[in-house]
Length: 216
Image 1 (cartoon, rainbow, N blue to C red):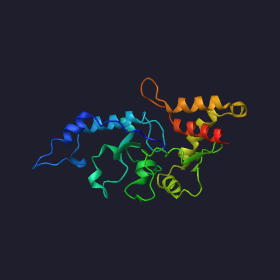
Image 2: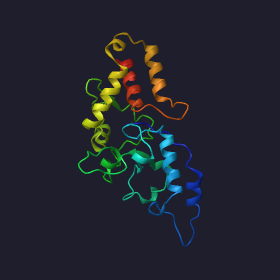
Image 3: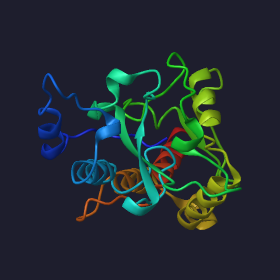
Image 4: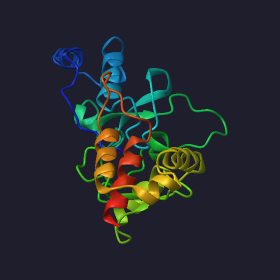
């Protein structure tokens, strides 16, 4: 999972909610452009233009606004910015495998869930360079197992992409000679946005793998 550090919600979204009165109450169902677009853009930007769950690159056209705690059961959080994120996949295609927000849907066990805003959410998972598999850092971490399964983060589609980025950075030569200093530099680089506020696709996976190497 990709950690999300929440920033302030867009002002136009705040102002729209503040229009509430005796005759009208804001709801996610009545949220329209330009406020909805501004919200979507803000969520993508604060995540460095990657999905809050898998970490692949996203834009307005291929992502959706995601309620971490689903509206069906947590209606009071439907417009709370801390509960809103941007997840990959906008339009569902017949036969296409679901993952991330669309795979999670409304079926969430709050007692087992790990939120993208949790400070340690990235460290609770590890990755394999050989096949891109994701697995819990602690085998007894039931919540990590639950979230990986719920979000379908071990889907072949995602494993193949993680394998490609991991092997492009952690090739055999680098693996045999990498110093702790180099690994720490990689961790910093892949977690830091560039001048345009963007992070590398699956950058959190690369940073996490460097952390795994340091721990070995």
